[in-house]
Image 1 (cartoon, rainbow, N blue to C red):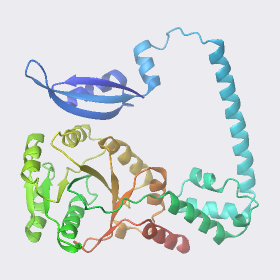
Image 2: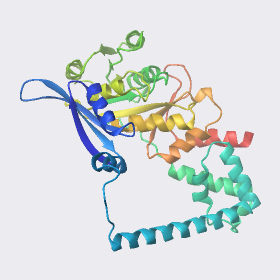
Image 3: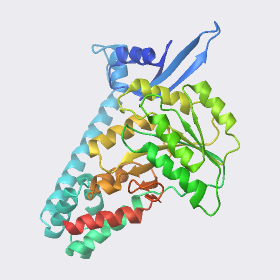
Image 4: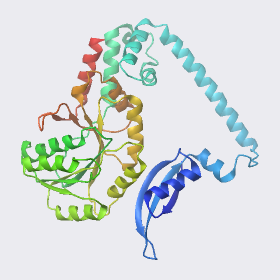
Length: 360
């Protein structure tokens, strides 16, 4: 990917410039506001452009290019490697498909949401081994591999921190924040001083909802509308152990709101910021991928998984966690505040998944 910077009076205009030049395949990397020498504020955004798109747009399709003999030889070698790899993969698939135990276990786990590519990567080489001769033994082996691959983010309250929560509309961000606030303030080995900041000026009732929770728990709550207000709020709350920041729920395709969130994340007033993606267990895999891709430029530290109570089928979620290198921090398992919240545990996730397998 090639990075390029665009400048305009506001983030949306800068992003439109980038799209007009390179199309919709670009990815937003960062956005910030700067005061130029003429005293005017302008927005700079940086986008990542696929190399092929960049070359096409800057050099044109008909640019003459003569490859060297060395380049042609390298291409031939790579093509040969690709053919050999395909032959090997075909042979492995034939062996696996003709192995009854392996094919049955693969079919079951695929039905439960685990990707065939991940299963093949784990199973290749097992054909003919004792593990592949017993269904339960093979399933146990794959569950151990899942346990090894999943990542947890330990709960660490040893230092002051600012925790920001991002994600699409309707994921349960505000309720999760209320649960965490109650946990930190009242349910730990010692009470922590907790404050809430609300950046969500879009959703009707969003400020009132968080303020209601804050009043019940007797926790300070500040609503802000811009980056300057955010900095002032952080300065005002500097003595607190933990500051929880609620952001606007948004579509992962809403460029304007995403850029505005970037401005908050890049604020020079922030010290130790943790950005947590709030993701429902009920979302289909393709949407999980889009959510992660479009929020990942916020430098995500962990994922908080909500709505465990609304599904019995966790294979899609498990498959997502296996595919992306992002640790889990908390699970929201119901609507009750603060009871239905637990520190993320891969054992809990796998136990729920095993229950689904047994049902299948």
